[in-house]
Length: 361
Image (cartoon, rainbow, N blue to C red):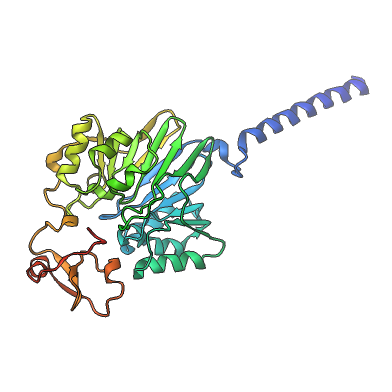
């Protein structure tokens, strides 16, 4: 074979190699900065079993890791352990605190102490002035390289690659209740839509942006005072997830389950107290859960709801020496300035004429 023929063959081989290399590069980078994007392209949501609280982990199609709420302080270590089992050395692209209730933000203290966080979002209208909430804000601000975003603006999006995103959809009204001031997070990926709405109640949800949802994390753990018929119609969920321990606050409430069943008997139900961690994975067209769903059976709900003050007579509550309110949560915002807190029973508190704190109502 002549030298010219050999050179031509080498040139052809080189050109083919370059084309293959370029094709590989295009396949493995999607412009999001993720070098292993071709191995992702799926969205995964896990509703952690944190007892009487909320904590949702989302892995976006481009590999970004996002955490919404963190359960109580006692659950923080468990959450961190589960996250790091999924990915050693995980860095959270964003942590979102829907509102300052201790059963939602308490565990975030451990998250900030043990993990790297790039951005932290929390609502402007709900004051973070309890001991637990103050600690979360302090840790977020001291986190190296973490951008703290107060007042997550309605309409703001967090991109997750391949057309997926998280979007804040709550209204702009400042409500008197921290629950109603909850950030409302809408998750979208192609044909898949989900909602994580903290403890938002009915008035606040009417001013929010509405979407038909495939998966809904039931607001306020299935409380009697959330999930009105209008709310259910506005979001039209196919699958309902309830994060609860099944007994502490009387959640979920029988009347709430009945409203969902009356609207659509085909809505499928998942409860963390029954199934543990609940995970849904989707490529954007179809989705699959890690457990088999159950039908909604209102009879399995509670006939009492501690948020209304109707509970067992021996229920422990917290009071002050001169206050006119009782509190189920020792870290309640209404006790933030108390010099001394006393433990008593609900029966004894009511006998003194005390009423439920407005922040827990």
